[in-house]
Length: 180
Length: 332
Image 1 (cartoon, chains in turn yellow, purple):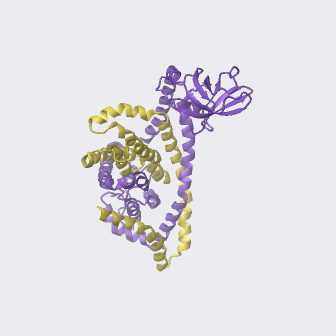
Image 2 (cartoon, helix red, strand yellow):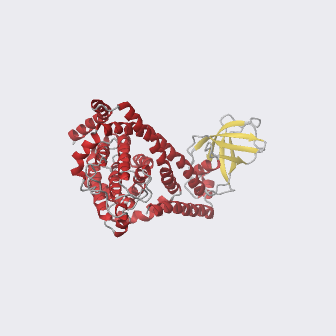
Image 3 (tube, one colour):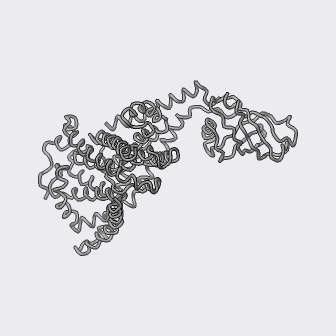
């Protein structure tokens, strides 16, 4: 496991310099006007970022309202007894709800749980595994579909959320199996 | 779907905010208009002439319990006694860790510096030099906390969203510039031919040899390495390539949805930097659990995406079918 992690760590350190140096170098070899090409491509960066803004604003403000309203506590209160029947403690439920909605919010929740239960606690391990094994679904959705101005997302949201849910349940079971 | 979730978040937020605020009003959670007994200690003795005086204020536990119906905190907090033309005010120090509901009262009645401040009963009869004085403090009324909170949060995060997007410009520019070189040098095309057989089962709608294949691979590889900064531009560029194949520009195609759910499920073999920072060495124990959970959820995401494509609703809205006939089988 350590060897695997080290190899991966070293690899991920080298990938970026390789891209940064390798592409222009190979371009030169292929007689591509590298500087002009770079600038031409980079100009798109601004357009893409600006194109994303409406999508991000729409998603983030709605999620912020939801968090500020206290609705989440109510959901946890209702869902907690149900999920604890299938072995998912109510304490990690806020994480499952928050993770697809906000990256910074769920990171703050991990920090908060560390404060409350300590790093060794199984609840923190569950929450951290949930955090590490998933992405902020709605942010990714806003950025990737926003960049190409897609508004009709078809089955992206249900599939993304179901996969998140499955990931969270697996996280809880794996942590219980390993440390329980 | 997104329409309902989005509107649902907003409506549910409003409903809950109304409910909580109504409950607070009914229960009088903040005891609006009532004065709270406070014991004020003067370290240097009471000075009737001074306009401002540093004191230590302690809430009367019995009065606290009676007013707010919560366990009283009897700690003494540094505060300042201020005399103005309107009357005498007690102003708690900014770093005082006030018990609820007074912390909410502070942030709500004084949003600028979040300091608890209230009007005290007259100090007229207090002899100069007194060490301890019992008085009562009346705070500004607090109402509609949650309603104000949701509007505040909406405004704040609208700004955050724009800042996030603007913050992406630099990294996007860097990688989109590099990708343009790679395109011109033929790297993208060559890579697409290599990885195409691997990805073809997941993305059957992308024509053979299409550059989207190599961008998808770069996006997934960057994710696996934990290089989120690079993954986003690659993913966006891949989406742009897929959009070129899309006859119905506002609707996501099957390959677009597949790419998206592969990103939301996020196979990260290197845990996110933020999590490492939070968990410290403990993270080592969790690597295996994280990889297992993220890997399985990716398999589930891919399977579900394939299954959902076949649901009549989503099959009917597939742009490739809408316009009659899929994209050409051969790209080149």
